[in-house]
Each structure stands twice: as structure tokens, then as C-alpha cells.
Length: 226
Image (tube, rainbow, N blue to C red; front, side):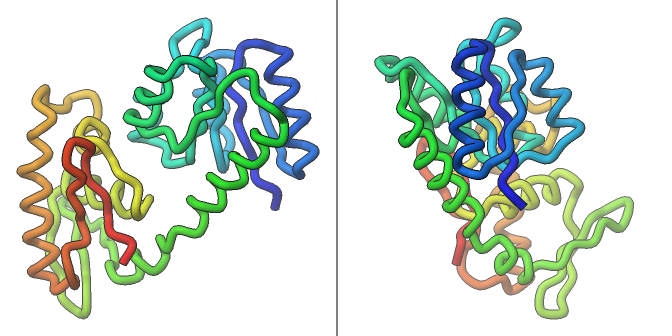
């Protein structure tokens, strides 16, 4: 099945050019000119990648990215003005996988989309997840590794699933807190450090080899790819 891409772009000419470019590369695409329409499409359809413009009429692309990241793991390429370095840096810090500046060439767009899809789809998530068997037994969740079973709190479970869903991707403290607590997350992002320590301790007790949860100073945490 051809990759399915959501184009979140309010400028009609640009959106249609992107759609045509992707079609020529054998991708399918949908266009959402607003953040609200993007959320509706994401609720109904599965997309393999999002192309997200920074300037949207109902909210800016950064705010949309921030709210989407805890719920959707699809790779995101930001569409930004060529000379706006601050836009590019902010997008990457919020969890974007790449950016492309306007105006862009169709060849560059196609190359970047293919590169991001190749990078994210070849991550060995299946290998990582095969080491941990998940149980949603209420009221607590469990992990099982090499015949041993350890309970996790709901928050720890959501934290580990978020990290494991995208091995190698660095998640910021804010993203992980949002995944654990939703809108009721603590105001201090460093609260996540305590939960990471507890989770690492449980993984060691389950005899998971090495230190799979890696710290990226100043950036956040990732689940090791091996």
C-alpha cells in the first residue's frame, strides 16, 4: 500500500503543488487547510506522515504539533519560511522529524519525505517490543520479560509505551509528561526524572539487558534501539 500523507497547509496553490508532487512519487495525500480539519482527518484516517505548515489560520503549526505529539507518533515534516532558523529549531525541539523551507523544489520535497519514511519505518520497533510482553490487566499494567512479570502503574505503562513506540526518537520531558498525565500534567517538567528512575529500576528487576532508556541532556529521553 502506498504511504498516505496528510498535508496541513492553508495556501491552496502550495497544498495542491505538494499533493501533485506526492502523487507523482506514488504517495496518496489528503489536504487539511486548518488545524481543526487536520484533527478531524487524523481521527478518521491513518496517515504515515504529516506535512505541517507553521502558519495556519486557526492556530500556529507549533501549537498543533505540541498537542498532536502525545497522541500521534507519525513522523512530521514542518514547512517553514526559508530564512526562519528559529522556526526550524523550535519545530525540531517540539518533535518534528525534519523541516523544509519555502519555496522548495518538488525533488527536494520528495527526497525528504522518502528519507523520513525510510528512517522511521526501519526502526526495529518489533525487535524491541518482542523483549517486553504487555498486559493491560486492571487495575494495574504489567511487563513480562524472560518469564518474569512486574507490575507498572498506569503512568509508567503509558510512559514506556510512548518511548517504545518510536525507538531511538528523543522525547522531550513535556511530551512524556503529556503522554502520562494528559492535560493534568505537573507544571515542573523535571518531575519526569523521578518516573524515569523508577521505570529504569523496574526494567533492571525484569532483567532487561543494558540501560534501554537513554538520557539526552537538555533534550529528553529515548528508548535504545539495541
